[in-house]
Image (cartoon, rainbow, N blue to C red):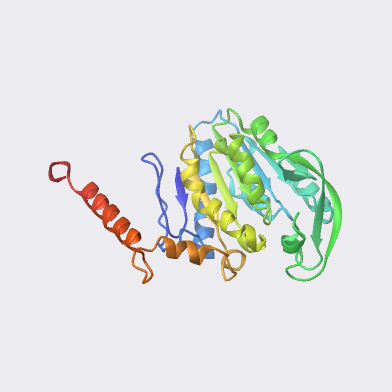
Length: 296
């Protein structure tokens, strides 16, 4: 799997490399670097289909909004690859029905599903942002970032089930997930059902700041652990791009993070005798492990 982020580039032996500037946090916060990585992801998806002229691919645009991402994707693909690509756009906002319908007529094999992607099929309260449509969300807090919102009822589908139906057996499958904070509920469900192991190419936009404070530490842990978790798939995604745009993920409190960092910092001034012993013990263990076998 190729995990693209500012702080970690950990491709498997078979993955192609995309150079990304290194950082210390594990988060992809540089917008231009993320755009570059996202373009590389689309190019890799096209190469996947281009390698086998008989192969067909599927793209799930979950959180399609006005369809701009889907439009740019389809226009960037070669005619041959585009004809063999099935695209499903998930977007429940009524304001975009007509523009997304136009895309379904402009391109073959494109379908708009006017539903919310969720952990099960049900009816949900969806919050429409009156100023910025990109913040419309299942979260009232997220929808009101730029002002007032309006609540409507929408249908949902079980995303895991849809992914199993659409992506199973596909040599080339791209999932783009931009659900304005709902990713912290969706991704655990997709992991435990095995559905998140099905995409060959994965793009996730994260929105930590939309999460209530008491849940933020667990949400950050999910984000940072996802690359390693995906590596346990029988066939991990070939390319995985995270978008941790700063205004969506930084500058707000993560309660418990400071205390947790202090507990794991071996040089802090309040270290107990037990803590000092632990630091020495594990420090020596890791130093020995780093030595060549004959010197251990």
